[in-house]
Length: 93
Image (cartoon, rainbow, N blue to C red):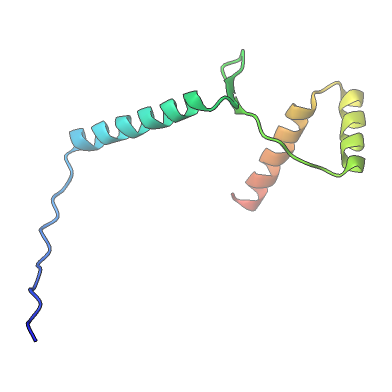
């Protein structure tokens, strides 16, 4: 029975700020390229970046939402976005 060799870990070196900056830029570039390939992501006229998603809701809720949006003269996307944002803020997500 032979002994297993002891492997000593190498000393961890601090990462130079330039290297960290380079890595962060490279990661951001990869994300931008991935987003550019995703046809569901669009840039609106006001500069906001949005992503298309499909949500299924009960028909009664859809009807209530459509009628409410017609009453207040707002689009459904804006109302849903605001409601979802407020909910996520309230639960700390």
